[in-house]
Each structure stands twice: as C-alpha cells, then as structure tokens.
Length: 308
Length: 267
Image (cartoon, one colour):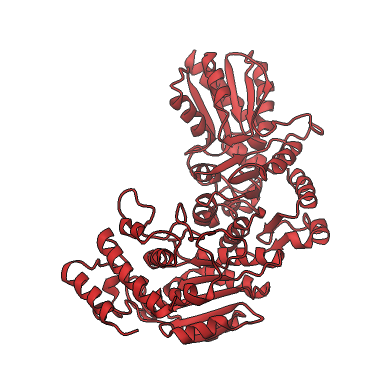
C-alpha cells in the first residue's frame, strides 16, 4: 500500500506546489526521488512528532496542503493532542499517513502494534479516516485526501489484496461490495480483508456463503450499506485487526443504534482488549488473536451454530 | 497609540474581565501586558479591518491561559468592540478562558495546552520562507511552559531551518502553576541553554517598553528569542509575585483596590 501512497504523492507534489510532505524521520528509501525532484516540498522534521503536527498546522494555516508521514502509532498516539487541538480544532488540510497498521510490524513488538489508533482517532471531530484495501485504493485515497475538507487519517497496511492488478479493486474511498452472498454479511477493513476472503472460501465448504463488504472510509462510515444489510435480516460480522474497544465494529453498532435499525445479531471479531506480547509475523499474530482465515471461519461457524 | 497608555487600558480590562467572568490567571495576564502593548503598539503590522490580510505579522499566544490579555489588547486596538470583553467566560461568550480563534477576529490560533504555540509558529514561519513573504511571526511563551519538550523540538527546527522571520518571547516571571520555576524544574542557565539551541537570545526587562521595543526591532540572521524578565501580577501590588493569583478571582475590595492601583499608576 505504501507504493500506492508514494505514487499518488509524487503526482500531487508535481501538480501542486502547495503540497508539502513532512516525515518524522521514517520512510527510508521511499522518498529518495521526491527529495531530489521536489526538495522544497519535502521536510524531514526529525524524530519529533509533536513538533511535526504543530508544523503541519502552521503550514496548513498558510494554505499549504500538508501530508505527514510516519509509522505505527508515532504520527497518531505520540502527538494525539496536537492532532486534536492544532489540526482538528482548527479544521486544517492535514493528511496524516501511518504505515504499518495492525500487526504489520508484528515481530517488532508491542510498541509497533497499531491496534488502538482507529478507536482513538475516530473519536476526534473534523477527521476523515481511510483504511485502503489495495495499492490502487491507497493511491486513489491519497490523491483525494487533499481535496477532503479537514484532517484526514490514512492507515496503510503492510498486507493488502495483491491478486488484484491496477484498478481492479478500488473502493473509490467509500465501501465496496466484494462478494454477494446470503444470510451472513461480513464487514471488513484494511489488509485483513485477505484473511476474510480466505475464510469465505473455507465457509463455502460448509454451505455458508456470506456477503463481503470492505469499508475503506471508516469515518464518516457508509451508513446506507450497513442499514441495507441489516434490513435484509442477515447476521452481521465485523472483522478488524485492532482492539474491539471502540474500533470498526463499534462504529457499525453505532450506525445501527443511530438509525434504529432492526438487525438479527452482530459478531465483532478483533483483538479482545489486550496487548499482544507474543512475538511473530502479522500472520502469526493474527492467528493468535483468532483473526487468521481459519480463526475467522471458526468464529463465524460457531456463531451461526449458536444461533441455529 | 502610546504603548504605555495601551498597557494601562489592557490592565484595567483584564481585571474587569476576570472579575465579571469569575475566571483565573490574572497574574499570568498582567505579566504579559507590557509585551503585548509594545507588540500591538508599534511592532506588529496589522489592520483590524482586515484581520486575515496576507501581509500581516502573525502573533500566537502559546500560554493560552493568559487569553484575557490578548482579547483586551485586540479590542483596544480595534479588532472588535470592548463591549464584547464583558462576556468573557460567561455562557454563550466567544471569549473562553484559554484563547480561542473561533469568531474572534485577530486571534491567529487557539491554545490552552502548553507547548503547542512554538511548533505552529515555526510552521507559519516556514511557509513564509517558502513563499518569500515579508511577514514576521511572533510567539509568546511562559517560562514554566518550557518544561514541555515540544518547545525544544521546535527550537531545534527553527535554528536548523534558519527561521529568522520568527521571534520567540519568553515571559520569564519565575512562577508556574504550583510554585517557582526554580523549585519545579530548574530552567537555569536559561540564556545559555537557549543560545546553545541556535537562537539569537537577548534578555530584557519585560515591563520596560523601550527595551522591549528595541530588542523586538533588532534584525537577526537567526531565529530570535527574547527572555523578557517579568513580574507575575505586574501592576497590582498584592498580586505581584504571588502564585495565588494564578487562580484567584479579584472580587469585592480586591477588585476595587486593583482598579484603583492601576488607575493611579504613572505612565
């Protein structure tokens, strides 16, 4: 997904002198061409995230369209108050990009697990949040972020749907119906969609054929499609590689509550409000949390059995 | 306007505002009145009729808790009516306890949590450099506020990028929320520390308008930093150097005495 972001960023820097990219000393190698081609639009601010968001606010006040790049929790939790007070309260054109969502940097340890960022960032007013599902999706979202009013937060996952080439899979910054099934609807976000699609294959052996919808824009969420699926009387399953406390599944429940929608049952899959101290790859840690294809398949089968 | 006359008007307004709004931080506000008077009385380029004029100098109050002093200054120099000041901190007012830009012409940026103003000022200064604009950026910090690490991140940035369109003013009144800066986290040797961060540092009497004016007028190749030695609560004898008036509201006889002392003070 990072490639998609960088591709779009280069085009933006080229077409608009007011686009500026700040990095908190991360992205080794990916900005090499940008540093040479657009030296006045690139600033490595050093390892200083609080200052980075403050700078972004100052630049945006002067009509710059600012991208801020770092990894994991650094451009969000480390400088959360600057995002709240300086960026969001002032409703500025600041586009925060974090590489390495969920367990992307799994083996690097707890500090590098971005698993609460969504819940925390989602609670801020004046913010739009995207979790792309493919490289092209990341490119599309990056391009459109500068035109989106207020603060934008783009969550780049190391894993993404690689089998789709070019623009075969693009949500166009909203939600995307990937499989039309029946009885069960799975709502998913970000890179974990690959596990969801594998889980659906496993479920088909048991004659369970869920609908799959990927949400790229998490805030504001596509309420229409949530309600549509609920109205069908489908069981709803949400899947996210993040803490369940306040995350994507919570956002879906909020939509159902707000619209007084009648729905059968909701199953939220994600991290069960704990830190993960085990060491391993993204796939390994997903498995530990019951979020591998098998884990998702198991939970959905049990859920349906429990109901039937 | 004569900056000394302006200072007197601002002080009176500050006392009245915290009295009516039953709010805090009068000591912090009185501490910076002379700095604001010199800035708005002769240094800053601004037009109250065009608060967002491109050419204007930008001023940010980072110690947002002294917001009353900024509101009073902006009203006195014509950004809005002094009548508005009477609403400070009351239900439905635009003038919150910590300075806010929403619907308040002349306020560049909202603050209130410390350590936010300087990074933002650096961003504005950087934008000015990129655009080769002529405006200058001024940011006023409290000395206790220097405990926040973000200021030091920003100072490294300012000096690395040679932001000589930036002037940082430190309101050095030696008091912070609970006690003195010395007893909390000793800032000294402050001047040497700030110089070592690559700032062009000068030290002035923060209540002497001529000293303030001259140091603010001086040009530099580096980002400038002025340590303004001040007295918290300046202008009201029983508030001076007293940490109590970080919180207390002047009511009754305290209010009357404060107004009287300021009115009777010489220019």
